[in-house]
Image (cartoon, rainbow, N blue to C red; front, side, top):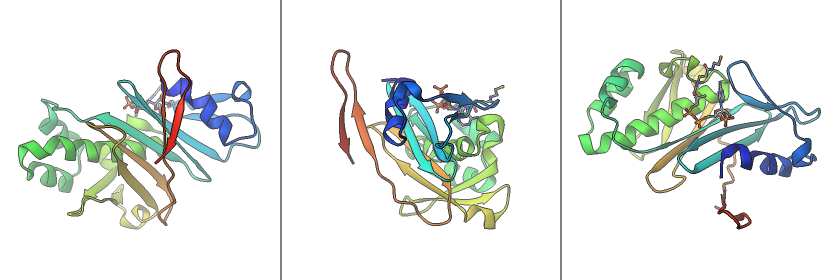
Length: 197
Ligand SMILES: CC(C)(COP(=O)(O)OP(=O)(O)OC[C@H]1O[C@@H](n2cnc3c(N)ncnc32)[C@H](O)[C@@H]1OP(=O)(O)O)[C@@H](O)C(=O)NCCC(=O)NCCS
């Protein structure tokens, strides 16, 4: 199921609109939004990787989501040194090589989710959002453009959409939001199935 195909029925559940009546617009940087009157407060973000698609929705503040297939990237250390913050580089390069790919994609998805929330995507440096993984494996935004106070207004959460994939959802809000996850499967000829997670 592609994210675009899934989007209208999902957005329809959270608006009073028929899927066909939803008007999708895109900013110049490519961030999608709803043009329908009365639902402008609904924010959503989509991400796809291989045959997995994710959609994140919230009300009142911009949200971003990103998923990636965790894989070996030959130029990973170069990308880390070129695009990640100093502390992130030290953290990643200090890990045993077999643990680096997962940590790299954990940081990457968090950063990209933040950039998709603000709507600039990779048009803004990945180093804008400094992310830390603590020993318990939880994620926090340490600073935004070097500012630690603004970072406290951000929430980010990592998740596993499927084996060998990592995802992150980010939004600007100072208290941890309640997150509800739903999974949908679609196969040719079958109707969608759904489960709460
Ligand atoms: C947006 C971007 C982060 C996508 O990352 P990706 O890992 O390759 O792909 P994903 O599947 O995770 O995300 C794609 C989705 O992100 C969304 N998206 C695209 N640009 C976005 C932005 N600036 N902000 C938030 N979301 C964006 C779209 O919904 C897109 O899906 P769609 O094309 O099916 O609608 C990356 O491609 C990017 O930053 N591109 C540059 C954007 C840019 O500078 N555009 C200038 C156009 S002039």
